[in-house]
Image 1 (spheres, rainbow, N blue to C red):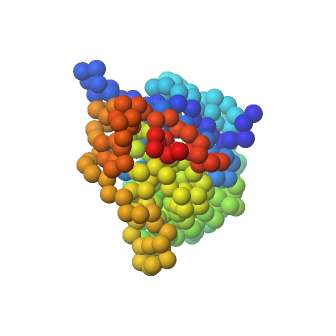
Image 2 (image 1 turned 90 degrees about the vertical axis):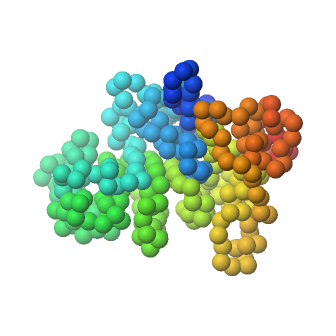
Image 3 (image 1 turned 135 degrees about the horizontal axis):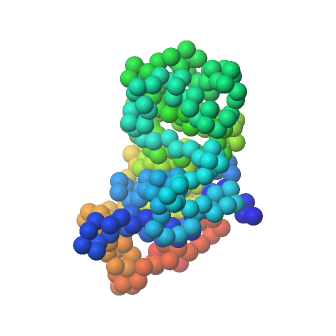
Length: 319
């Protein structure tokens, strides 16, 4: 049995848009996440980050490829994921306003997963809810509030509390702080890290914010047009970015000190706009924007290669 908690092999998610055309939202992705890791999945809007999360959770039936969770192969079908998987794997969405039932109070929202997964006896549910609310730094009397009566940050804390109700091993965090004030973002990020260490959790953290990833992840994967172009442990990733797209993203991070500026790669300016996911360029999909491109980049799609232990890159120009 593999030591990895989650493995994706050649994962594909294509959506038909008619006339025989497809959006290749996820197009042959490979990655793995070990227990206790925080893998940051980063990329511009439309790169396929959230599609990966929805496919892993079974909200989409994958077009091709394989997903292995906790040593067992899982597949999307008409019955969805197994009850065991749904207990062990949870997701926190970007917008808590749309993911929480406004017709229920917090107690009703949190009691459902406790009942479905038989976490505690019925007479212990309120006690368990108070315990979970304390974990996310909310008072126990919060259970009597409705989502419409609380702020955006508090709603997201309730969403995180709901994910914790089933005692999961793995949580997908799909841009959980992107719609919140900076001060609330910091509080939630610190809290998520504390909970991860205390509960021995594993996270897939999806974001477009490279600055956030430096502080919360143990390794980072960069996506571009449905494919991963670079994966590396966080420290190596920020010290030695290899893919031109990664260098472009890192060089665009705003900094406020000379020390931070010294850590950034040389400014990489890429021309043009992201191509349509319906008409992805041949060869390397980034070659239309890459200032280093060569003839081989236009005709041959590069393979992911391990450059040093744990550091993989998909680029013809990296030796």
